[in-house]
Amino acid sequence: MTEEDKKLLHTFEGKLRQLLFLYEELKKENLSLRNEIDRKSAEIAQLECNNKELEAKYINLKNARILSINDNDLRDTKQRLAKLVREVDKCIALLNE
Image 1 (cartoon, rainbow, N blue to C red):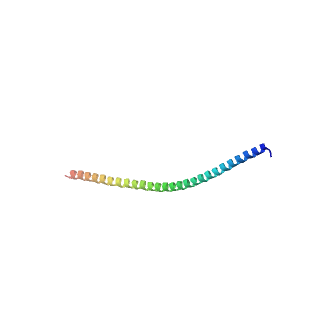
Image 2: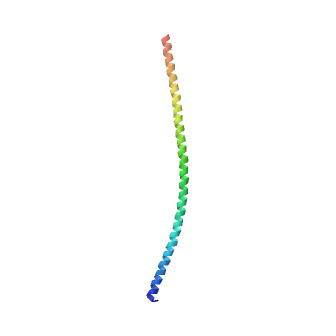
Image 3: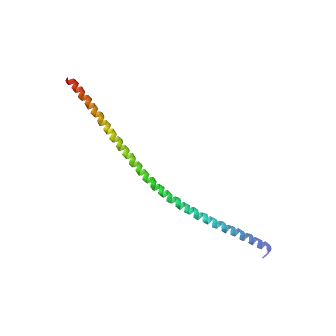
């Protein structure tokens, strides 16, 4: 083996070690990123569950508000009708005099 071949072999070994080092680093980074994906997926699942609960609560509150508005409208309508009936009764009483 000539001196030039030894240099080439040494250069090749150095580059191979560097590639192996980079491979191990990328493997660690890949594992870290996969763990991060798993954590984020779990967080997303939790947030979706919370979102569904909040949507259900919102729908319930919206329906309750609709019902309360209808109850108030009904009460107001009854009061207006009672007032109109009293006015009509007064008019009839005045006509009967």
